[in-house]
Length: 193
Image 1 (tube, rainbow, N blue to C red):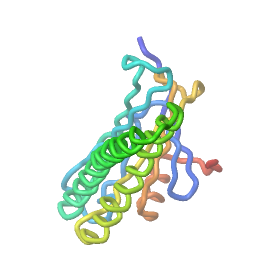
Image 2 (cartoon, rainbow, N blue to C red):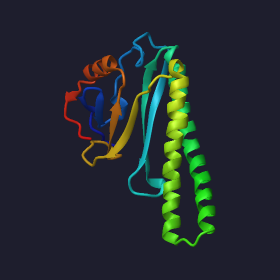
Image 3 (cartoon, helix red, strand yellow):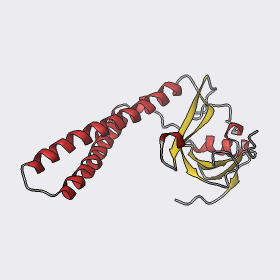
């Protein structure tokens, strides 16, 4: 039998720390993006691996985030744009890596310099994908995108759940964040960077 503590929520403005039973999180019944009546729900899935190895990956799913029929497709497009950015990042990184290796093969360079250029290629690739895909996509599709709730996992042995993690989540819309805090009896805390 698995024992978990009740859901504990702390917040500072629109940032939240959730510990304990993640299934106990309650969502205000209005669109998280605009406040209209909800017609669809979305989930926030987060994964982390603190120990290494595929079997040690921890996944947490916050279910039932409400959205209206207008905002739901915008949220999905925002998720899609993030996936395209990640793909483009890898593509740019591999392309630049090949360019750097070809350039270095024509010159006498050390293995250390080759390794550093691979890291630099992927860093530049990520920057290019952020600029060309994410920022340009946001500029062109501004009215067709909406900022979704975001979150990540932090290791926390005192979290009160079997996974030993806490969720750090951001709700972009301040009014919704206030209602979420009230509904979940969130305690005001100071969240460090």
